[in-house]
Amino acid sequence: MKVFRIEREKYLKTTLSGIGASTSEGFRWNSFNTRIVYTAETRALATLEVAVHLDLSEDLPTDRFYVEIDIPDNIQILEVDLEVLPEGWDSKPPILVTQLIGDAFANRNEAAVLKVPSAVVPYEFNYLINPNHADFKHVKVLKTVKMQFDSRLTKTNNFR
Image 1 (cartoon, rainbow, N blue to C red):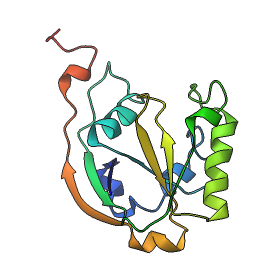
Image 2 (image 1 turned 120 degrees about the vertical axis):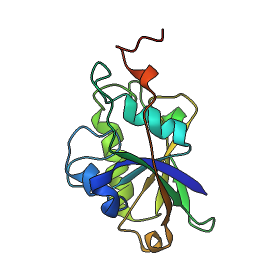
Image 3 (image 1 turned 120 degrees about the horizontal axis):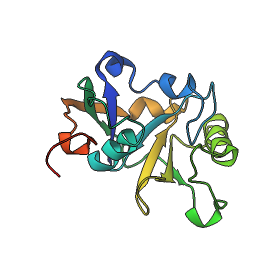
């Protein structure tokens, strides 16, 4: 299975480390000091997951790359059932419950990948990769491609 993430150029060498998510607070599926690699099922979803965190009244970043990642078919994928998540699981800022789910996934080491619902696009999914799981060694970056945010995403464009 192929999944995607958007990465800044300066972090391409560590894109599968989970360091970025572990050094920040406020991520939906992990708390501070828990390493998880966030990926999306499509490039479009990855783009939206990043775009919702940008100030669209400013210039769009030009230092981003699409990272295409291969998760072999024989790697176990656990799934969070949308029906069991509490009301407000998709709120901003994220609630503690979803962070605890991701932390438990990372700490229990039962699987290398956790499929979770997107809080940005209903009925689409993100895949969290645990860089500490034994099967992680089989997860590989296939390619990186320079990306360009479409200027129509900005609030100041003249094409409306």
